[in-house]
Image (tube, rainbow, N blue to C red; front, side, top):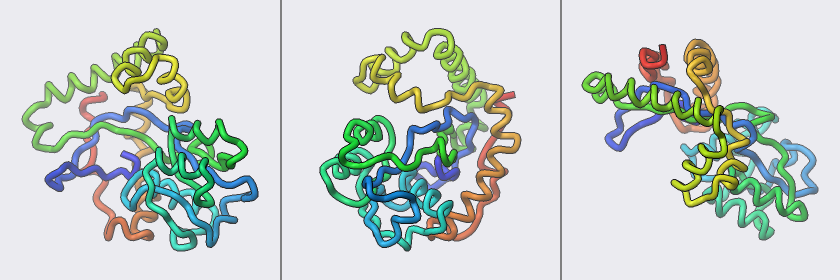
Length: 234
C-alpha cells in the first residue's frame, strides 16, 4: 500500500485489514558518484517506474524532501530490475529501485552509490486489503487471513532460517538469498499493526495525499476512514 489507496481490477477501493511490513532500506535511489546530494539531480535523468507506482512515488517523495519535484528531472520509465541494470551499465544519472535489485548497485561501487533509502525517508510499506463486499460476506475468512499472517510473523521471529527457506522457495530463491533481502524489511506484528492504524496511517496519508495531488496522480483526497477496517487486528 505504498501510495495508500489500493484498487482492484474493477476500480473498487479495497479496505486494508492489516499491515504486512515496513521498508527499512529495501527501497532507494542510486546516483552517480559525482552527485553529492539529491538536490544535485535538478536537470538530470532518473530511471523510475511509471506514475502511480511505488518507485515513482518514492522518487517524488525524495525529491520533495530535498526541495525539488518530478518536474525538475527527466524521468525514464524503467521497472526496478531494468533500472538497476541500466544504471550499472552506465545509463541515466540516477535510478529508483528496490531489493534485491538495489544490491546490484551495492555490488558495483564503480558505477555509483546509494544516496538515500527508506532508512533516511521512511515511507514505504505493504498492507493487505479486501473489497468491502468480500469483508461483509466473509468476515471469518478475513479474520483467518489476519491471524495466519500474525502466526507467520511469529514463526519468522522464532525460526527465521526455516521461514526464509519456505518463502524463498516460492520466489525461486534460497533461504539465504531471501534472508539477505528480508533484512531490509520489518515484519509488522499485531502490536505494530494497532499502532499503525491508530495514528501512523492517518498522519502518513495526509502527507502522501498532498504529494499525490501535487504530482497529478489523484485529483482529491479520499476519506481515509473508508479505506481500512481494524476489526481484524483487535
